[in-house]
Amino acid sequence: MAAEDSERAGFSFAEGSGQLRGSVCAVIVAGGTGSRFGNPGGKQLVEIAGRPMLSWTIEAFDRARTISHIVVVCPAERREEMKRLAIDPFGFATPITFADAGATRQDSTHAGLVAAPENCAYVAIHDGARPLIRPETIDDAVHALLEDTELNGVVCGQPAIDTLKIADSVGLIDSTPDRSQYWCVQTPQIFSVKALLHAEQVAELTGYVGTDDASLVEEAGGLVRCVNTPRDNLKVTVPEDLPVVEALLRARL
Image 1 (cartoon, rainbow, N blue to C red):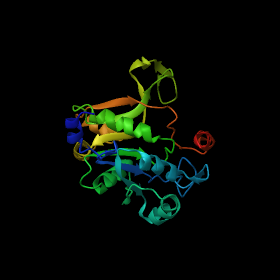
Image 2: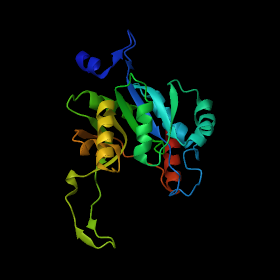
Image 3: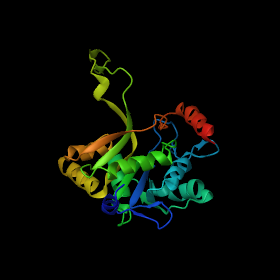
Image 4: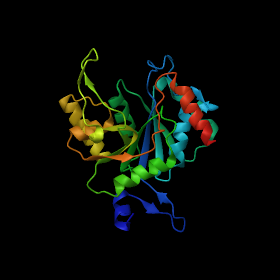
């Protein structure tokens, strides 16, 4: 990255170390109720490969060279439990603070965004239930955003490889679109703080509800690019996801 790009992004290199010191805050959204997972207490503390799932997610951002701070967004009543089980035992080096989850995903993301330190110019939004994210994937996505001054954000994902169908409410197929323009997107999704705050304000004024944070930025006229990242960044949504995610995690140990 050129020196002027580094300065624009709020980054500097530690003298003699070759390591980035950054102004990117990770916002890990861990506020779900676990309704699809079937656990009234949520899924963030379910044990995977000998540790709470959330601890694996936090560890990846703790090890990422570009992340300077982590905000965990969770229900207020679960904050101490998450801290005790998923944070305190692991000695993470990156500063970690909390924000209270809201009634919707957009509310939770906003809570995390406003809780980010003032010196953070960029924010990486990530699902707490994606414990397979790799530190190098996070860093590569951050650099993809910083290297293109016209972008407002980037999203991790992959071009669609399955055939796609457009169908009605009972499954009758209407058409088969050309999949070459479709991507399956995941998290992290990384934005400038200014762009995401503006997009949230526009959404509030217009009543727009997006299915991810990138859709808010797109709706507000922002420019977001897909970044091709590993397909194993799976999300734990239902119980049958656990054995697959655990096997992949154990294979890395």
